[in-house]
Length: 128
Image (tube, rainbow, N blue to C red; front, side, top):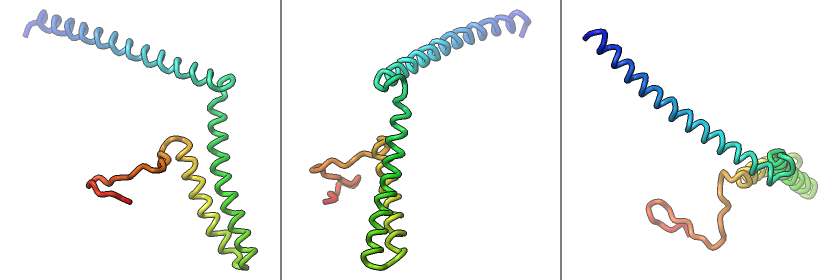
């Protein structure tokens, strides 16, 4: 292999590299523009860009609400039946689980089941 062949292969490789760099730069610019569009859309729906804070407060209040309701029901059950502290402990755990489930549903990580819809297993069996 001569020096000219080596130089020409490097030149074509750098041409390919330049084309790839331009393509990558275009993709990065498009991604940044897309993110700017989402940021504008988010601030337009919330007042002054505080939509994220509002969503976080909603999620945290749903979580805390589940725990408080569970603890309150457990305490009332303990007072009524005289089973202190077992009702409080049990319903506190149930409230925690309900709070986590509410947060997951509100965040859209799991779907709320629609009434009247049938759930079918993968093997084709009916769960009713």
